[in-house]
Image (cartoon, rainbow, N blue to C red; front, side, top):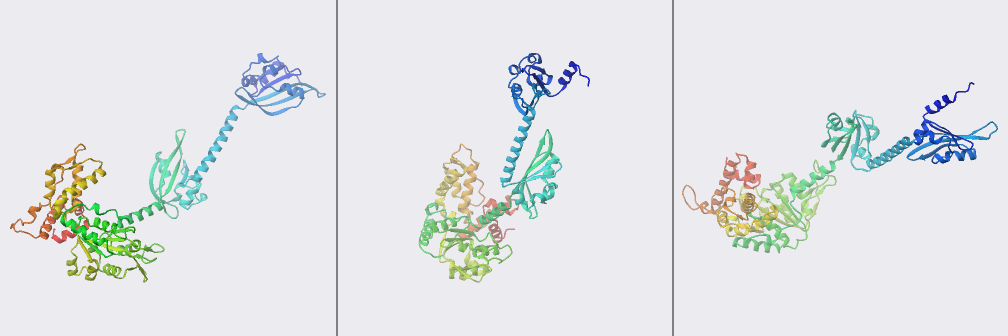
Length: 571
């Protein structure tokens, strides 16, 4: 074969992408191509003709010459550059070492890429561990809306295993609602707190989905699904319990009953004596007079004060619901009855006190069962025939005329006598006007804490207005009026003036005893009725005939307003 000219051989070596170094037997460099210059940063003119060990950092060509053994695939650092090199000895026909050659390439970028790939795998492993450990379901969709990742919590919440959704469209898990993955992919905007139902069991969830952008383009979306079915059930149960029971612990004592008028002192004395006995107490008085305060105080002063205090508004619940809540029920007693049944409030209040507010509104059929509770000290759950003994004290309250109800047949006479063992009459506010200044001061102190105010007192002029008002809503209305007055005050004002008071729409007490037509003296009941009727008519007028708004203006229950409208024949 014809031998190539030297310059052509050099051109071939210089065109190679790999670096090449050759040394003679004595270790002097005879070849240093362009790639070697680029990779090492050394110039060929500074290297050729000189010993390799003197001019090339970390070279091992002199070792290959000495040992005659090749070194294949060796990594080497040259400054900030990483190379992989093959070093082989050059031998003649009889096996003698005549020189050595190193062929190497720059793998710095490859090494960085390898490290990056390794880091990515570590990050992926970390992310998978996070996804697997979270209690929220996570699903990831690609740019076409197909599921590519789901975590174990997703399967637990939706009931769908990965093989049922991976590679499938994002709508595959939706029972009710639209796909938030598709919405995000279409709009490019995240969605938050979307309620929907997922999976075969139609589990109620809240969904948050965010878009995934790569190089400015949307490439997919990530969804977080939170199971709220249990939260909803607990919330409904809590709301139901709050509706039935105001508290399980009596909060008030005798100190919370403000006033020293003879009528109040008489009621407090009767209540103190009642607290010392186990007898049933009947608290009587108009709405807003503080019957519940007396019930709390009696319980806290009794031997049952360590027991529970259960309050239930008999007018707030339907007959069937009231019966099941008071007496409890057995499993399967009616549609919706929970598994295992449920104890009633009579049982829950064991060795404590149960306060039956608005007892006059209980139906005749339920009155019969209440009578048995009072007589026999036992209850029978709905759907059961087995009586359960109970040990509790009953305090009842009403603003109704029970004697009239007994006459017209809407209230059982035998139950009336069972309840009316220790009757206590709570006086209306108009009968204890001397206590209004003390009540106002107590209310101001309490509302200062609630409103963050520093109101000191009611001015003499404003107090005169309060003293001359008929107070059909009693203490509850007084608290409402003072609260509204404090809201009307500027922050720097310390004294409630008459201009701060809301418009009081009822007749003054000194006018209420006389008829407008004849000027003749009225009985107390007639005066009260006239004041109530006037207040209701005005409230209905201000509310445009809306009875719910009128009830709010009067600070009374809507049911009570309907009763008064019928009572006074208001059209």
